[in-house]
Amino acid sequence: MYNNPYPYSSDNKRYYTMNYYFQTKYHKKVAKVPLNAGFTCPNRDGTKGNHGCTFCSAKGSGDSILAFFQDLNTQYQQGLTRMRSKWPDCLGFAYFQAYSNTYADLDALKEIYDPFIKDPTVTGISIATRADCLDDEKIAYFDSLAKQKEVWIELGLQSIHEKTMQMCNRQHSTQIVEDTVNKLKQTSIKSCVHIMNSLPYETKEMMLETARWIANCKPDAIKIHMLHILQGTQMALQFFNEKFSLLSIEDYVDIVIRQLEVLPPDLIIERLTGDGMANDLIEPQWTIKKTIVLNEIDKEMVRRNTWQGKYYKK
Ligand code: SF4
Image 1 (cartoon, rainbow, N blue to C red):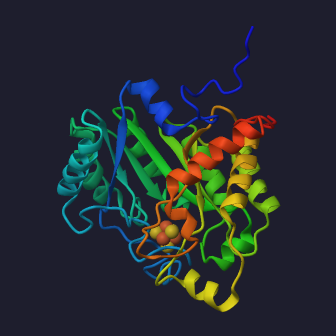
Image 2 (image 1 turned 180 degrees about the horizontal axis):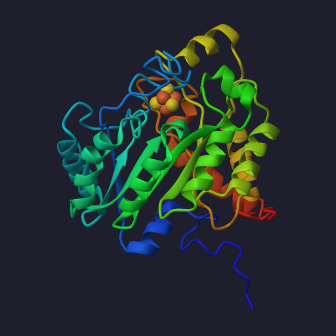
């Protein structure tokens, strides 16, 4: 009998895409609409730090949000209209992207999230935040929402290496991310963890160790990004002063494939490229051509005869 090594794919992808997950679940395209709910972040307001993570843009990584300063409903409806001009019958997912979207008291969170759970045009919600902005009470609240609609919580990890993340001013530990993923696994909430390749002075072996940690921790999904050096960030200053090296496209393709190989086959790969805005991007310029990067990954996986999970060890 033919043994399909990549069962979570219906196209040329040798990894389990978010698109495949949504298509299988809803039988339709699902488009995430990025939103700015007006939060800040404890790493920006002085609670943990004042300047944020060194790679984070002024908009708190929410640079692709269409109507950044409009009210939430307007942002969502405008974003959904834009998505539907591309995919006319797509379903909408409200993606709370900018800053730390659980950094408020419970009543304030309910005011923001409850209307989206009630809105029939919203299929589910996805919430980007920091692991140190989620206590048990908030997790219980989001769990109650997840019993009504699909709810994802996305946590920024970037790297498991504390030395790197001290340099990047993350201001929380790797352990708290692990503890939070483990708590989310006890609920109906789905979890996604972000990692970033090419952080200053990290070797490919270190990046692979971060992927192995993800394989062991096993959230529901992962986003893999290349570091973007953006105008106006602390990282840009460090880059100009120290001239640390960045991965070439060939090296990025290589490390991403090696990371995919050690991940579990049933872990959803939500992204393999980031969304740096071309206007603010200093380096690496090759990241602007996202489709080329994704195609190169596909081609190289075929050439190597490899797939997600090929070297995954339980
Ligand atoms: S935790 Fe997120 S929003 Fe806050 S500074 Fe870091 S990347 Fe930016």
